[in-house]
Length: 328
Image (cartoon, rainbow, N blue to C red; front, side, top):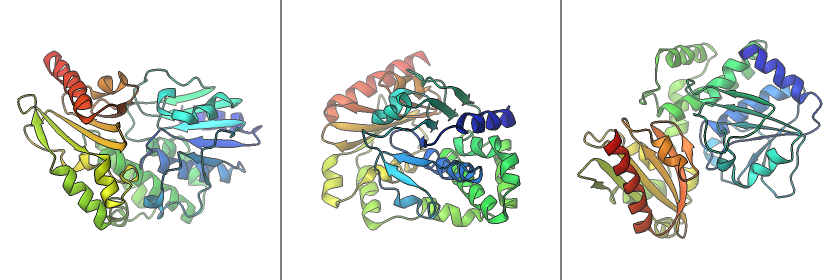
């Protein structure tokens, strides 16, 4: 299947004079980093492409994007072909849905459970068993990658490893299985330095980021008889620190592991009364909760965007968790 998909994709793209690569809203170290690798693979086939972002600050990926061609989305943009990674729903593309709607050909590479309002494409490869979409890109194009010079193989291996770090939370999530470690070992054979990538991806904080995280953690409360951990960052906090939290590592990773918590809700106000929400649970299917609000992700880790006051948003989400816990 893997080799067949790569061949079909190259055929699909062969007549395209312009190619857009994009990922979901609030891009992360899987979707965006996988695009860096995919763009390089396409270049090696003589196919030029442009990564289309939401205009977010990508400075945290400086160690991987020295060659990347990236443009922020503009309403007038139109490409012959569009490839969407780490996302299978129109709902999670935002305004960049236009890149799909206007393209003659569309391909999707993703590892999430099929979500609400799925993207209609000419070529789809969706495998929710995979640890990350970056790992999928490596596996789908491995025969191509093997033919590259060592430095280029190393670059794509680094991107792949970072995508795994992102989606396993440094190998602590339940998706850190034998095949993931086997792939990580293969990437080590390509000369990656795991400790360096770990430091560059996870431990590159500014003082304001530490302050932001610390003050967010101070809001922590236990709800629903102590079964759900709730915390938030309001817009005023970001403004007071002159800090843009959307492009940094989620605070959630600092609270996963609280023994008595069966679920985690983290609400981050990204503009007045607009909240980016991260949901986590080891026993609940939080993807189903997120999907009710146009979000998505994985069974144990998902996200959504919702509008309202903090009190309204908290009440709504706790009500959903309460129903889910009753049904569990």
